[in-house]
Length: 144
Image (cartoon, rainbow, N blue to C red; front, side):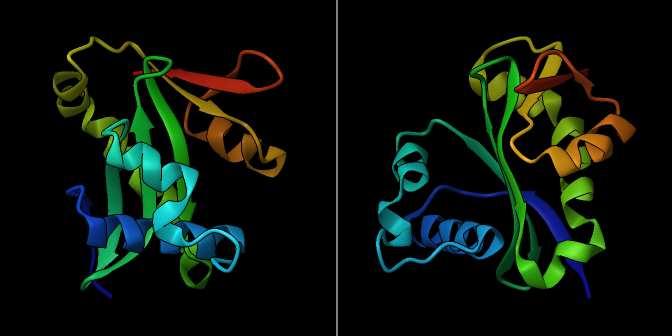
């Protein structure tokens, strides 16, 4: 299994692939809201995010949506169910943080911290292991 970590070009086809993977990861159905019409699909089309992904051949198996809402803000980090036990999300997050300079250049902003929302409390210990600290009930941050 050869996993490639890379920045994803924003195209209609990639938006569908990304959102389809996100739906899979979160157990969502595209019957109510098609993948290419979701809130995140619309935000991607507005260039709100830089998106990095883990890819096997042409399949997106994990992705990270990065914005500059709060410095380097991890808006979404997910892995499709089939690969969720392989710690690909952790490797992808490390890849994203290692690309800080590219993110700063794209957003034209110096970034000293990475922030993320702790919507899933079961992941808090995982984020603490890689250097994030809780700053309130909702957010964690890490100096980068």
